[in-house]
Image (cartoon, rainbow, N blue to C red; front, top):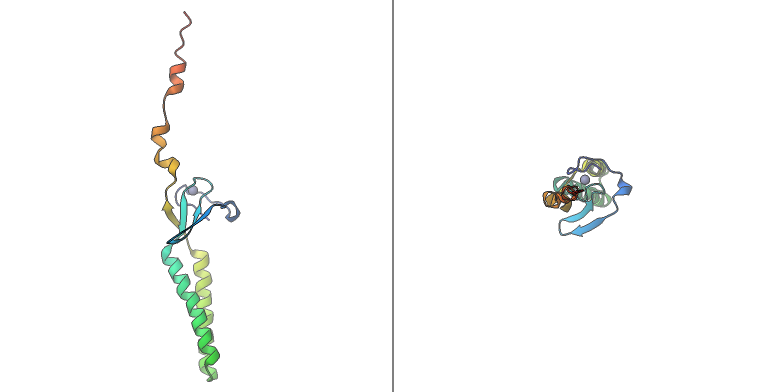
Length: 121
Ligand SMILES: [Zn+2]
C-alpha cells in the first residue's frame, strides 16, 4: 500500500499496527507512524456490491423462470466483479497525522552548539 503522508510504499506484511474506530479499521504506516484508512467512498461501493451479490443470488435461487434466473446470475456476477475491483482499487487516505511531524520544530534545540564553546585558557 502507498502512504499518502510520506509517499512511500510499504509491504502489506510490514503493516502490523491496526486499530478499530467508529469509522472502521485504521492501519499505521510503519515508516512515518501516521494512521491511514480506506477511502470511504470505495468502501461504500464495495459494501453495496457485496450486498448485490447476496441479493441477486438469493433471488435467483427462488426464481423458477430460467431466463430470468440467468439475468439475475449475471447481475450477481457483475456485482462480484465490482466488489473485487473496489477491493483492489481502494486507496488509503489520512486518518491521523503522525505525532512526530506535528512537534518537529519544538524538538530542535541548539544544545550541541553551546558545548563547543569551551575555552582553553
Ligand atoms: Zn507513511
